[in-house]
Picture 1 (cartoon, one colour):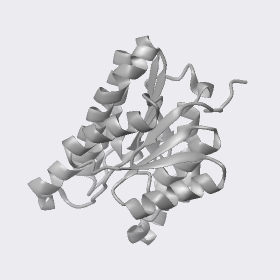
Picture 2 (cartoon, one colour):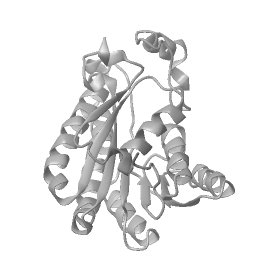
Picture 3 (tube, helix red, strand yellow):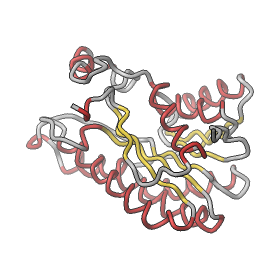
Length: 250
């Protein structure tokens, strides 16, 4: 069986200071990757890094505002520097998810969602994937959502931004796959994190519609990311893997 080991690789994880991103950073580090923890909060980022280091892993924090294109490009440069000249794994995890009726969405809110959920990913892939391709190997994992696959009231803005991510995943697989870069995504279902705490019972209600009937823990989502980033998924390319408790299966 092909190993999940990521020893010797450098992984950049965006939105890694809490929730799914923090769990993913920890899981990648446990498999031997040098993890670059990207986010806006230095305090939370350094806490994630400290936790990884306490368990014997290797990690560094990189500050970035993914709503600003210049900051995203700087993140790519700084990550490459901290990685000793390379980034082998890119986990495009950061995202924002406002839920509201279409008529209540302002232009500023629309732009902010697409800046983080789509544009930042587009820039990071453009900055980092060519070097992966030049080395003949790399892995990119994009975080998407189950509501990118079907319509749900109040989620037009969020769902449409992630539907763009699903298409970009396939387009990037076609573009960089022939040169050794695997590009995949995970379609995440309701997950209990700091960011979804405000949803309260609505999170459980949404989760109850799936066969498993409960929200995921961040570590369950992170396990899927590790799989797609590792050589265990060496023949997996251009897919959006549902990690949603079976919601999109019924």
